[in-house]
Image 1 (cartoon, rainbow, N blue to C red):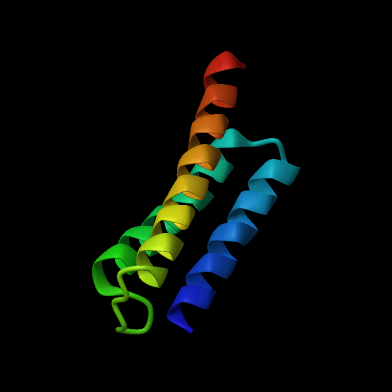
Image 2 (tube, rainbow, N blue to C red; image 1 turned 90 degrees about the vertical axis):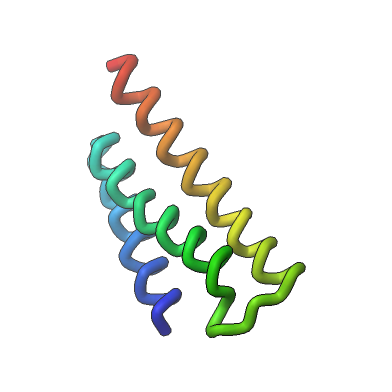
Length: 79
């Protein structure tokens, strides 16, 4: 339930930032995705560290977080 809570809060903040057109809030929401992805890569999902599934989920979340925060930072710099 830890993963679901953090992901729900993070995506909620990201959606709020996107709906308000506020890049700083969106970047703040992506920090939660960074946290969950790094935690997943180090500790696994629910204590199970699988070489395929855990790394895939962790890297996909890390990629999504990087894309969202980079895109929002670009919007913040350009505007």
